[in-house]
Image (cartoon, rainbow, N blue to C red; front, side):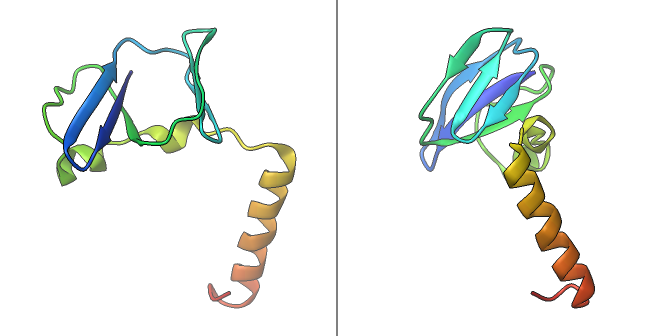
Length: 93
């Protein structure tokens, strides 16, 4: 996988060959020990075979970062409660 950091002006940095990615809040851990904390720019996680020169809607659609987000137990419980409430009210909260 590759982690692509970007802003409105374009691609800032790319970390290639990232494995075992875990996203916790504004931190990313990868490759069994490497950690980036205090991330305050946008990022996406893509397969290694995708060439990224600029950020387009097509590239953003390939983002896999949601697969790597970790929730602490309380955050997960809140998420589950919100989903249950939305279900009970027909999708409206």
